Image (cartoon, rainbow, N blue to C red; front, top):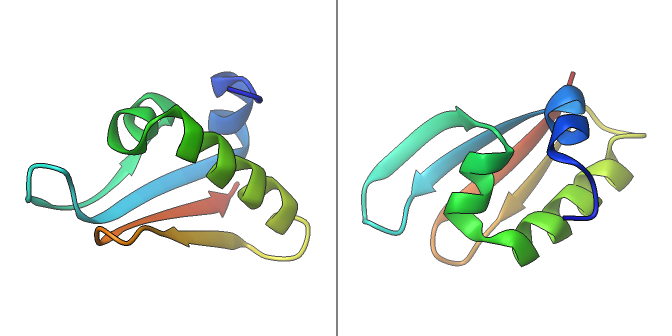
Length: 76
């Protein structure tokens, strides 16, 4: 990961909602480890970088995947 998990967890609340890989509906707050388990390291890096860039102007950044999963980063 480009940023440390400590930095990401300190600056953002990460909410995952939609359908996970097992086909179950989820709507919960996750940490960096939960985010990595859901989407993998490559997409997590991409989404965190997008959230950091958007954090200067917005309170939240929503990233959607085609498989029905939505990850939202809320600024603390």
